[in-house]
Length: 120
Image 1 (cartoon, rainbow, N blue to C red):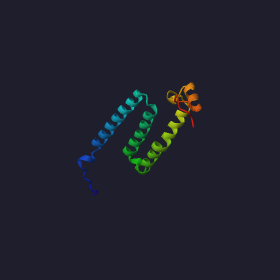
Image 2: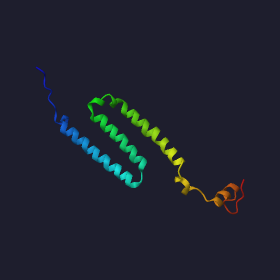
Image 3: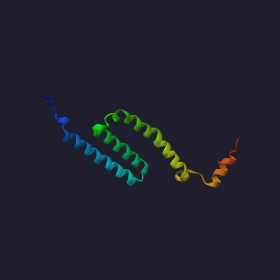
Image 4: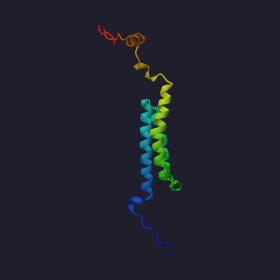
């Protein structure tokens, strides 16, 4: 006869799937908040990382990926995401509000930015 494993209350499938469902609701709420704030890149990154992570940790067939996923997620979050954001900002006009006017930039280049001071 096969031995029947006794499960503890925290190993029940109902509890597991209810926790996964609550995590999905929380991530969905956070993604909607980010999207409403206009943070599209962060919303997409959060949605991708959390959905892949929840799939890997909820699926028994993807058990081996549990060891690879944190490294891939870290690489995507800390290397690829800033690189993509930098490239996206480089081809937009996001930073134009922080730039000087043409006259003020010319005055700074001439060295006569402050009145009464000579440039070196």
